[in-house]
Length: 346
Image 1: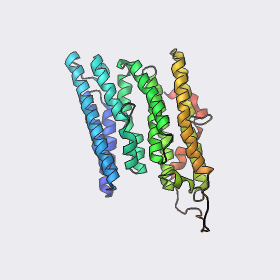
Image 2: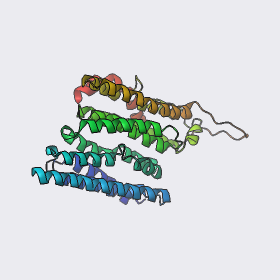
Image 3: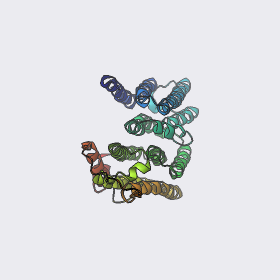
Image 4: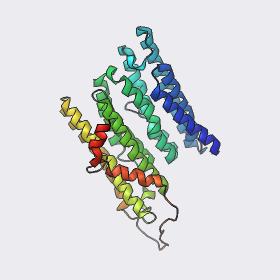
């Protein structure tokens, strides 16, 4: 892709995100979402492969439907209350439609079907943008409207997302699809707490984005699109593989790594809200996710493929790894001791 074109698309992504997260008026927020959608489409379809074109078409149709619902919800609310302010969403029908629209934007169950397919049709770097940057504006809108939304509906969708994200990721062999189901599962954790402590949702999103970026960039350095490729990458980049294993365990939420912090805080908050059974269920469902993270970690570090023929062993790669991988990986592993500082910041 032409560097100037890529610069325009990435700038538009940042512009659309900034417009949405800084707006108070529904029409401005909707405009930001539309700019975002139109900017990411060329990045998804840049390889001209039929899978990429299909992914871009699916993404466009779903996002267009979700944007139309956002606009419809805000217009219904304005019709009943005379308010276009995002925080003044009081009409119950509007709240219901908006929840469905943002769930479509994010890929929450039962509107999750498009997300693994779109991620599978994109490159790893575009997949990283879809999993992190593109989810930030809808999460912000959820954050701003959280007092008006129905907690029971959000809790149900969150539990279903965590269950389906874990369950459907179990038998996948493509790394992008595994990360897509991992994203759906993490969104469940974010959605369950948004009505009770919205700041925790944002903290969870920031840490999730950090860890996912580290995993995507590591896989991109290894060019690992399938588990079979991941199995042979140990001989080329042993250090990166070892770090990838730890980052995956952090994404699974194992102490003493960074990923344990949001899960611990969310379970604590749910218990305070007298929702101990819900906290127990979501914790047990996250074990499904732990299984496929362990499978990825096992493939990347412990498995060596059988050598049936005598051939020259692939030795260390000479290509330097992106320095961002090192920074993100260290943050993905070591932020738990800094949790008092993080909590005081939010």
